[in-house]
Length: 60
Image (cartoon, rainbow, N blue to C red; front, side, top):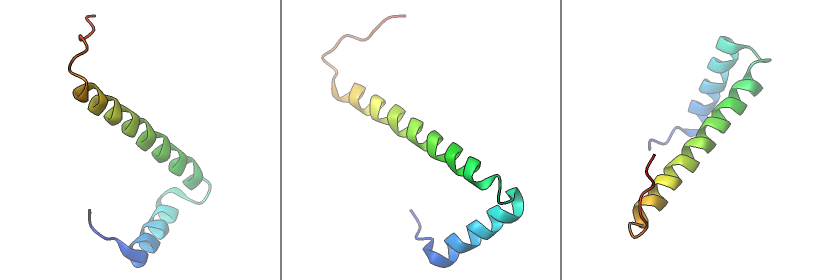
């Protein structure tokens, strides 16, 4: 993962303010955080599933 640095973060914040406005940024941040959290849970579930091959797979 590339190192963005402080200047890059400041540039991203300014760009976000220009594109979305100050009232939408908290909602956008919350949505991104929720999405990343769900992605991590899903990825962890897949990894845990791969580590336990002894259990039979569920049929739908």
